[in-house]
View (tube, rainbow, N blue to C red):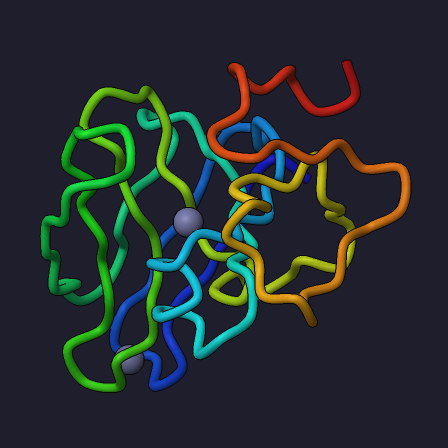
Length: 142
Ligand SMILES: [Zn+2]
Ligand SMILES: [Zn+2]
């Protein structure tokens, strides 16, 4: 299954991803905790060219990330669901796993920003952890 679809909770925003995902990260940074409601943020990296909005228009705001570069974060203006983010200098879109229609086949490849993790955040045994940003992700299955 190469094509994946997803959207927000109310159904206003729909999107598709037409290439294999580059990997799944679990981000424990404080921004992600705010956006998720407290949990770490589970994101799948999709090649930028493979990502397309198919319905609706997400609201996008820009915030300075830990790297000093701006990150654009998209959410549904109707229901508020956080949907994806786009670091300005990265060739991928970080799509929230909860926004995907089907995510049961995915599993985390790494945990990042664990130095900001809440003491009660869970880590996956055997999955690499990084205090902040990891080096570039290997392809899934590589
Ligand atoms: Zn919505
Ligand atoms: Zn984060």
